[in-house]
Length: 217
Image (cartoon, rainbow, N blue to C red; front, side, top):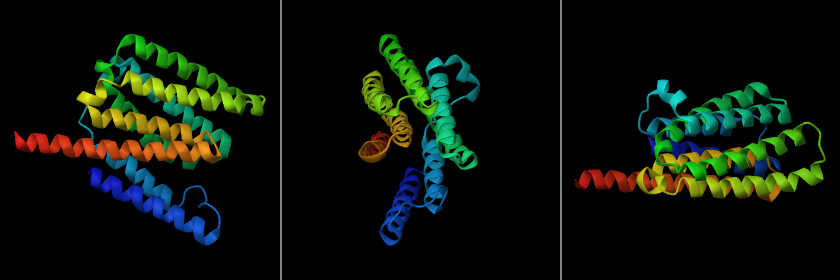
């Protein structure tokens, strides 16, 4: 299933790059590459171990990550004005965030998780201020800094999970990088997109190693 997800991601990127080279601009919102990316998210989600959706209420970290992803979807709708297209994007991303967070939650130290929550809450406040028409030149660098600090703290929070349940942990970091990229611009956008792809590669490599270990047993 991860191979199918990788194929979707590769074809989506090829289409995006070809469109940029031939027409001199990125594809319009919701093009063929968006369909490929949605397929990538759905396949990646399917590749993760199963969870009981009814236990979501008992997983505060998973609920928080789902809500955070949903807030990003709403922000994309406000920023671009394309609510339907962003909804198609957002639903599979929200499912992947909640699913992967449920799998790793029991390994998360409370103190690290609390610091992550605080950083993300501050990030949400700053991004909301930007969307509400606040001083962009002052708030934009602060938002980028908070995205980066939150990413580092998330990786630190998932440190133990990256050893025990590496695939869902990498999936969660990947979703976070994707959310960050769509609320940033220029080099920062491409930096987070590159990190997202690196996370997926690590997830795929980890899945292969886990499969080989099971086969050896």
